Image 1 (tube, rainbow, N blue to C red):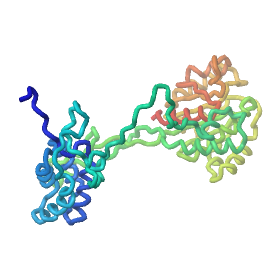
Image 2: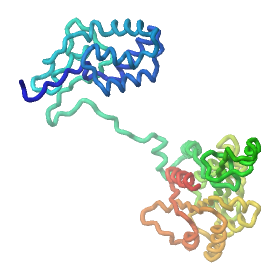
Image 3: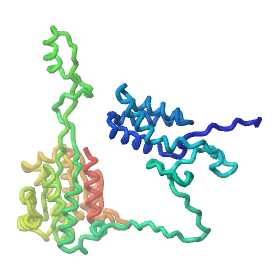
Image 4: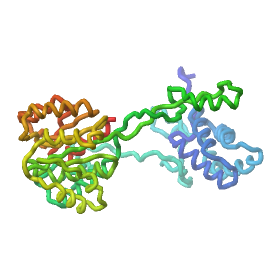
Length: 400
């Protein structure tokens, strides 16, 4: 008698249990019994918990898991006999594997190379074929494709001045399609929500009237969330000629997706929200360009920000995200810039400054107006390519 007990043979070793259960349930359903997902899951778990060591054990495991009604026993016995009478009744083979292996007590699974010559294959046997290891240094014949960016993704990293009108328009449409998430804010109004932390008094009292003024049902509520307003001011002066067309597409994306206010400025401030909401991109850009009469002229950033705060559109800034897209070159004194930016800081929720030159290596805001405005900004972001503008969208979507 050997010192170690010989392991018991396991039936159908190497068979995918899930595929086996699905195939057996499919045959059973065609015979009439209504076996479904629950029964299939029960069979898979039963085979995992107690692997069958004989045909009888497999029969009872499948019968307990799949049969729910007395009238389905005859159909189950017929299907089980059709599947296993000529396949699983093979004698247990304890020498199928290589000598010395711990799993050489398997029953040969038909369809995997270990069955008899006249046996049929099982559809649920999913053992992979054995592949011989190659020689060291031997190059494999399989090559993974090298991931490369699409043409549009490659153009997203090209500077604005190197793009033609068609490429700028295509990237502008892609930018608008990418603007799917919008920042939100808490409002003062509340909505009924079972997961809310606050008790809604009026609905709770109204329900208590039906139960003799005993509070049986407590209604909870949470603050409603509304889209946060975004105000975009883009510099279209002479120093921003290369970026003007791309920034118009950025303004159009904001104007189309949600309730945003967009302005262009050089020496005066021009509201472009209505013009950029046209259905066609070319028509919208043309009308916006025609509306800006001082395009490619001088720059008065501080004056235009003050004009926005003093107009009836200044309320749109309150609690909103303000984006100023400019290189910072300004003919107004830097002291005036600091004053208007302090006013804007007290009114806005967040201020982002987009500078097309901020992405250059070693960039430092040495321009006087830019240096005066920077302490009041939450972030200074590069905006020299459409890829940079996509990063701006990501920053805005997380600014609720």
